[in-house]
Picture (cartoon, rainbow over the protein chains, first blue to last red):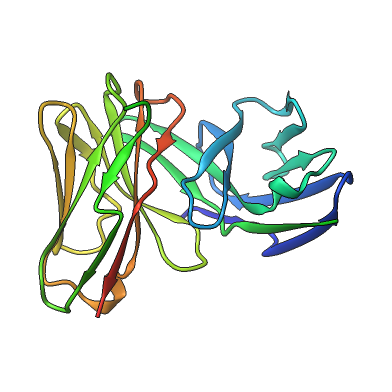
Length: 112
Length: 113
């Protein structure tokens, strides 16, 4: 089966840098995505890694290492509005399959 | 509208009743997905539509769950004989084409009493 593990909670202060890790036991996936979800809101797409290495999008960066079955989301210059849940998800695509398998989610609390 | 819309936003029903949840994807998006999110949990895949057909129904938890899509646009998820464990937020997403970024709607919060 497919499983992705994330820390349940992370706390950091405004202006700091925080890394949210995602380890997985999944094979044959197309890429690793990251989504942000504020309390009661819809998940919104943040980043996608199709290949190993680092992808940078403004204050957010994401990393993937298929050989280590590991990825992370890096948030820089933290702001209060970054307080939310963050989910990694593997993208399974091919044949009849087209779906995201989500991790357990990490609740990020940014403190002043 | 600009984004994915879902209705109703909240639904409270009694155990044993049937419910229908509606999703309006972004105009022109050919792929549509349903996910379920239980309290404090991640999202669980239910079903994927390409056009009006559903190549992947592997996530539907039981035969009480069904979904259809008409005209390559609106989709309805139907839950028959609801049970308390069906209580969750049901999220719909769409993408321009299979393999593209998925855009999520605000969800329908279903509570089964």
